[in-house]
Length: 392
Image (cartoon, rainbow, N blue to C red; front, side):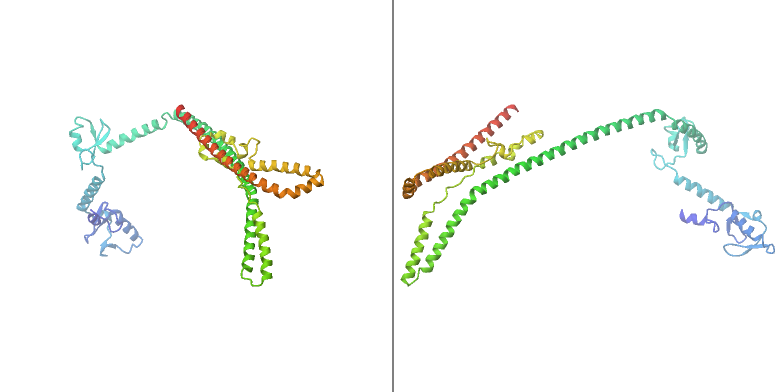
């Protein structure tokens, strides 16, 4: 088709031939193209001829009407146009390859030749050009009807939907703001409770350090004294001078005696372990969001509103006793004081075992109390789980 179209194209306008005229040299051109050439030569009246655009052979200028019509070429161009129109025409879906070249006026649809003899047998048919004119008029009427079809109702319904949509979005946005404010407040409450609980733990850390650090420092001092005594012993161990050896031996015995007489501090047990156990996160899983601010801090578990360890209460009582004892000593007579100072060592050696036993008993009682408290919490958790399972 493309090669054929090249042969059917005018060399001047490069379009398909339209009313082709043949020159004496056998070259064909469109009539309008030749008229344009002759019109350009009219200003040159002294030239009675014009040249062929293809071969440049001169031809007498007698007008385009005197030129012979190329009927064969015009027929070929017309057939080519019909074939090209047929190739671009839609084909029937029911009969593959058949062009839709018939219009059924009964069903108002395009059909092929097979459809006209089968499904549309007995219907009224018309040419495509006539159908085009009829449907064009029908289209304008249908277009105007459809353009105004229920437009007012649709606009009213659309406006109603837009209003409802706006109200719904406002309600959703309002609820979203409430949720945002609620969680902001909840986060603020959680941060406050977190800071409160961590502050209590920092307080307990400070209390533990205050309870243990003095005793640790005492033991460290004892170890340092022992190290110095051993250093002295190593320094005169190989001494051959009797005087120097005896002097160093005397100093070594003094330090050894002082170290041996220094009482070891009783084991200190700061009772904060039972408070820490209360803060197991598993116990917080059942807390409602609104009750987060009701979570108990460590200082809220003690009866007096603070988590002061029992060891500090013992020290407080002991301090009061020492104050009363010293006050009473001030009013004693000199002979009584002399008697006490003379026998204080004996009293100390007599009370030393009792004090050690008392300290040991306190440690044992503290451990027993911790175990009992742990068992009580385990029983409480088991009962709570049992009741929860029963309710479920």
